[in-house]
Image (cartoon, rainbow, N blue to C red; front, side, top):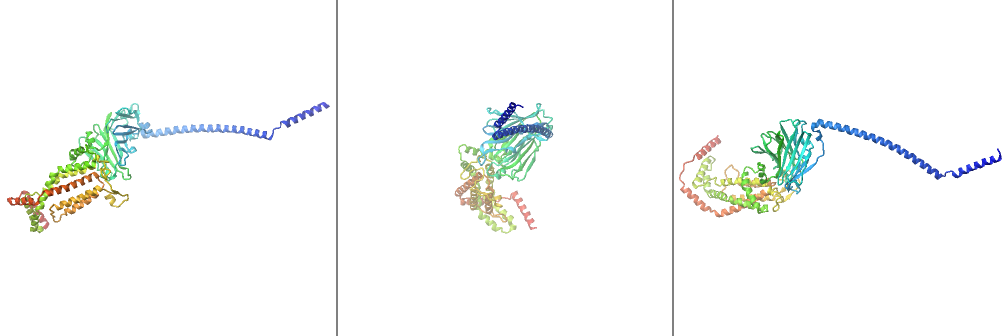
Length: 619
């Protein structure tokens, strides 16, 4: 190798070494390159992971969709087995629609197409809340579907005709369809100024699904506590029904046990009656024979009283017209229905006196007086004035018995022996006859007044006009007035007397004692051996009234208090007008003029009876 070649080779090597030296990467360059390569590897790894996750998610979605389809098929199969041809209506979302006018607001539920809740406007509960008559979820109403043995109350209906709020006559239609050729339809109509919710039930092609010869209608609801006293309200809450062209009957409202009654005839209407409000189901014609009503007492709740159920039958027709009455137990409102709904009011044996005498006077006074306490005062005065002649006659008879007491005592002294009881009785009757006294003369006027007393006893607790009307210390004359209450349960006392003190009741009992004392002072007390002392009995009666009336209507106690006070004034007035000496002189004159009379057949029979009794006693 020549010199030039060697030099060239060396120079090339030096150039390569120099290039390598000057182009050699630094530590920072090596670090950045390593980081760059790592990032490329991480990106690729994330892409691989994402592709795996996407594959897994797609597989999961496929599995979930398959599971949903399988579960849906299983569920649909179960619904078909349980609900038959109605399985499509067995599930849904419950929707609510409200029909309302100026008197009531009815909330309808798509589940069962039923009245779900009813608000009675212009009235509130005792606590001041809105008054709802039906109890929401605890209300059930529907026809029994014989194909599946279930009620339409469990089915979800579809609105076929929606309500128009602009129309004064509000109407809505619900339909339960098996298919386009077979369905059940409810149409509800609420008119202005009406407590009636009209219901038209129509069917098409349902013969296959309701095979019985008539429809079985079931209605059930729970009655809420609306008033101050649950016990008093419960005693006036019951099921009432009226047979077609016949009498009205009722379950015992005061029963503490569950009750059930078979409906023996064709029924016109069935009412779930509370103290002051009622829900009544009315047939346009009549319900078919059969069915039953039940009442279940609810003791475990302070907000509910009883659960009512009515099972009724309807003729199997393509269209059936019914209606609900949701309203107050107000006599004029009930009479407007013209189907004897007023018979739901418990007015007692003498209800005709209440309807045709007491209520007209009461309404006449209410026409120009707002204060209910003043109305009761004036009504009491009017009744006392009307009965004043009878009161005078009774007192006059009492005065006659009082002034001849010395003659009666002479007879008692003449025949002191028990075996002479018949002679003593005969002599006393002869004395009465000679002086012209009828021993029953004082009782007859009282007996004539008794129906009015009973009518008033029934009128005040049943009168919705007294509800939430205040007077003096009483904030509600329809229930008890309380001046003192306690929450501690006192054995025996709490169950008999209650946990409050009613001042009107105490005043009424005190007035009874005063009236009894006045009558005792002005009446001849002829105590018969073996008979209880009437004075003691009246004292006991006054004490019993304190326990009996403590939970009653304050308006009733107030009325009896007024009646007793007026009776005191009348007694004092009559006592000052009657002269005992003149009465005695007249009786003695009658005795002197009285001819001897033969014994009447009644006296002879009385003597024979007494003699036979004495013989039996001797034996």
